[in-house]
Length: 450
Image (cartoon, rainbow, N blue to C red):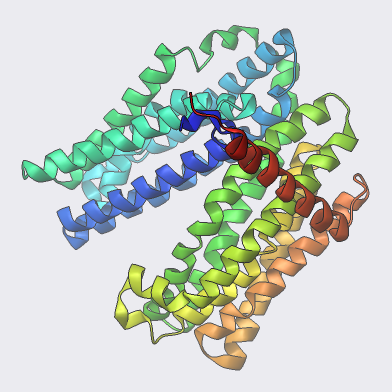
């Protein structure tokens, strides 16, 4: 059978899902290699560097990634060039500011005895600059819904890094310095590939306008605040657990959190494809279509997550043992994972609430939504720990945070989009049935081999 004849494999959601799935697998393989190749101090230094770099990258992405999709999708060529030129200007400005901040620490490099801090100061700016063209190309490709080039670029970046690490291990040349060096070089290779394929649209830099720059910056400041608040929201449980119960509790709690990648992969894929569609509709003043896409995507994912949650609930012990080892099976980790997976059924509604608020030019409201969730998270976590004095206190407090976000998002969106939770479930179910019929069953039964 010719696989490409089946409509499913031409579907943008499927391509986005495959891309995120492949990169997640690459990430796990990469982590496994690093843990085996470096000692504990070097591994700790590497992940400290990634944490600091990730924070800086979240500033750049939070400021401009959603703005690129919102202002560029569905526009004409002249407006599109103006937007991309302005994005290039702002991206260079943010990267330069962060690079200058890094340079301020360079004179003191020799005074840091901690190898993590020294390595971060040495490689931070170089890595941030090397990834800039590749990062902008990624934003543009998401806005254009071109998921095959995205997949190729991400495979070049992650695949070449895994290959280099494997070779270094084989040659017994693996070290923290070499890891940081080749991380920088693989970013350069990926950016060069994006440039050679004419994906970065750097010539639009000269089409920028101050009006567009100011418009994007005003939008981006709220999406940046939302992005940083979301990162803090995801880290709050870890900080509170570490303060109240110690690092052992953090290890147990983190294990089911990492397993939530099974939900995050399709969620990120659908959010990416749905965001570009909603942006195009909003830019064409079609609010009805924005609402239709919101209900369709969030509803479909909700129904998809139900059987996944049931299976995860049944096989939680096996999943925890597979990732963390048998010693974690008899801890709180399996039950925490079961609770997380039951909550995950409502993740699509919450995530699409936030994305839609950004798209319809209400990033300030989305920021308030995340901020309210953060407050609810802290209060419920501390209260849960004071009552239970165990990991369950934090785990069972998590649903309150999620429900708070869904309620705030619903109230904010209801003023602009006509929708109800019943609409989400009904439309989502119909779209799932239609997808199975049109993209899988009909092509399969109508296939006639030559």
